[in-house]
Length: 96
Image (cartoon, rainbow, N blue to C red):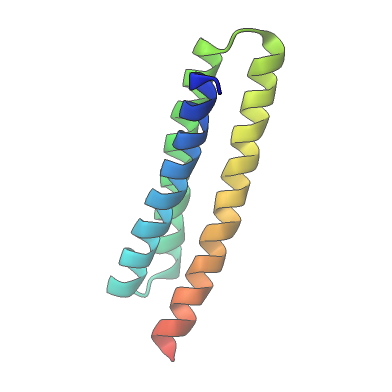
């Protein structure tokens, strides 16, 4: 497997794990919906934005750049949906 691809996937997993961890910790301390979701959104935006810039600088050709950015965009929206699901799960658990 290509080392760049492993780095690419690890960035996505780091973003997912970090945003979910911060979201759970923040939701347990405060019950502010907007603050919790905006922090998770901004973490993903920052990490995957930096990953997009890194991919543009290190990709070998134009097709690879386009595919990499599309995959990062899909990962961003996927992680956003996972964060929403985790938020509702944690919120229902705390309320119960």
